[in-house]
Length: 65
Image (tube, rainbow, N blue to C red; front, side, top):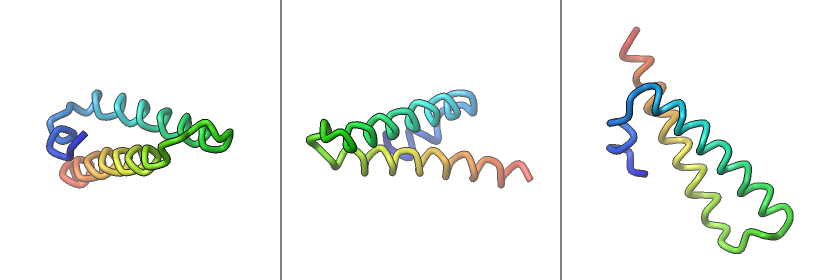
């Protein structure tokens, strides 16, 4: 998901997407620990997606203040 797509989401959708991304990241971490994850670059993609979502949330909080 690109940053402009994330910015177009509502606050509620952002928090839902954040929760989904966090669960995805945890699942990838467990798969990696049990050696089931073959494409380790997926973890990097999930981590960056979560960071983008957190960035947009922080930007919106800063705009409200």
